[in-house]
Length: 296
Image (tube, rainbow, N blue to C red; front, side, top):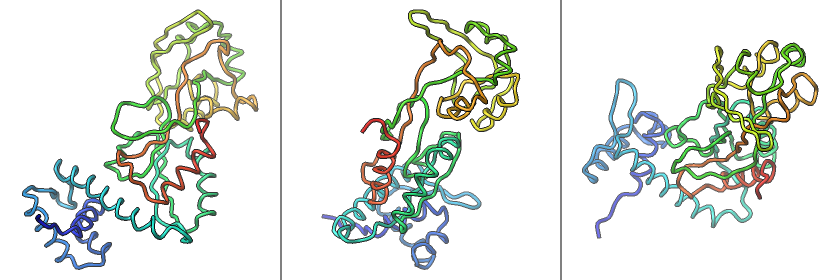
């Protein structure tokens, strides 16, 4: 049986993640010439080009991207094998890369991460906040948090809880408008959220259904910006209830048409297709489910 140099998987993964051979060599503690030579031998061994180069960086070809995913799984599996033997009596360590929507990250994850970091001081957590949905495999994230309705993908997901959409404005605006039915909203200034298509809405009230198509003149891609705009008055928005729960409780905002309901959505924890996870990631996922999950 033909033998393969499995160390080259580690070299290749480092090159893909660091995007240059020089940076990969520094990460591995090897010379640039050694890493470059092993990449050349790996491509010869496989008979395919794994990487393409532009003026600054290296990027995987389609074959390289597939080989990267599989190589990463092998390396994680190997790390897990070592960790399973060493875990007993050992302090958990490692790095976790997360991405989450801005509002959810600020209000729900930041405190959780602080407590987790206190409990596991040798686990580093990097949280990137963005209301844009990124490709977690391409961007090398270990976990992502999604709000809304998941699209079909090969990623693994776990539902943490539900939320409902609410139509909100300031009390003075609600009093001035005197909205009585969903159709009244079509003539009112509407601030839309770029990441969720809610231009076509269905309001329900017992057996009644009303479908609307709202046209917004202002679109914002961060919910914190939408909330600020609505608080300024003379407009309304449709947001997940957890984004405005405090504003509703303190009467800074009110819910328009509270007897009419919009559809509910979900809050999900999403991970790449590989089921192989480091001890650090497993511990963090358990903490998220314990603190934020309604579905145990």
